[in-house]
Structure formats: structure tokens, C-alpha cells
Length: 249
Image (cartoon, rainbow, N blue to C red):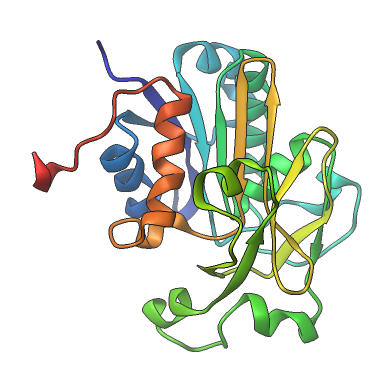
């Protein structure tokens, strides 16, 4: 049996006066290690690429986090809370829709969670300053300290997450300023933050499984079984054989 192929959408950045396409390493290693899949990067070429052709060739899609935000006009709002990455927006939103139409799973992390909400017609908000302390570390801290910042989320009884991990509140890392305002049509809330924000959602559209979280399971999947479960679920949705970590083989 060949390993399923997971597409991961790239971001664009300027580097040495040229545009590059990139994905942070941890977003690649976590599914490669724990999902039992092979990973392929999808450049953010927007309408230059045939997204339906790409959707036909991959077995699933992961939309990752990023330092950029979705352009607000894409969900009917006005906002100058950048930075923005229009080519990532076009690629991710179009490819996610095409992959769902093809009946294949799409999972999302942080920005990817927000992208999927917009795919389903939902809207986003930039959190007001009085709510930001719960969801993001203070400015100026190290990367490790930023990802050590967290809060509890409560899984919704009967949901996908609760069925796998239980209904007891669990602590997740939190590294975001933007969040769901209105949940997209057809999506089901899976977990809430203490202030009521939706922190995870799911859907089943035909044979396409959708699961997205606002937090970052890729950051600590090596040591956190709850985070590792996200990638196990991704592999199962793609029909992968159970993954065996390289150091356990």
C-alpha cells in the first residue's frame, strides 16, 4: 500500500529581494511523523494553478498557521490588521473548496482554522485588546515562551474531539489575535475557550472530513498525546496505515 499524499499550502515571503514560497518545518514533520503520510508542498500560485487538478492528485490537505492574516474583504469586512498574503489566501481558499468537493479531508491549524471558516461562509474578528491577553503571550518574549502561553478549552460533548479525548477541559497553547466571529454554515463547534470563543470545529461533507483547531498541535506533538491525536486523526481520515515514529522503528 502506498502512503497517502498530503498537500500543505505554502506562504509567500520576500527574501533577498525576491518572493519565496515557504512552510515552517514543524508543520511538515508532525504529519510526516504521526499521520503516516508523505507530504508535498503546494506553492501559493493562486489562479496560476489549476486547484481542481491539484485536489485530484492529493489525498488530503492541511492548512497551516502563519504570521499573516486573511484579507478582510474575503469575509465581507474591513480591516487593516496585516500582514497579508493574498496569494496564500487565493490558493488556500480555492484548493480547500476543491479538495472538499473531491470528497477528501481538509484539516486546519490556526490560520488554516480561520481559512476553513471563511470557506464555509463564516466571518472573523480581530480580538480587542482586553481579550488578547488570554489568547497571546505579551510582546517581546522568546518563541518558546510564546508557545508556552496557553489556556483551557472545553470539548463539546458528543463531538469528534470529545469522543476521542473526553469532555474534561484541556490546556492548549494559544498564539493568535484573530478568531472566529460567526461560524461557517455546516460547521459544528468542537471546543470553546473560557471567554466563549470557538477554538475548534468539524464537519462531514459527503466523504470529506473537516477538522480544524485554533491552537498549534504541531508545536508539541512529540510530547503531548492530545496534540499528537490531531495528526493521528488526519492520517486516519486519509486512510493511512498507523504511523510508527522513526525512533521507535
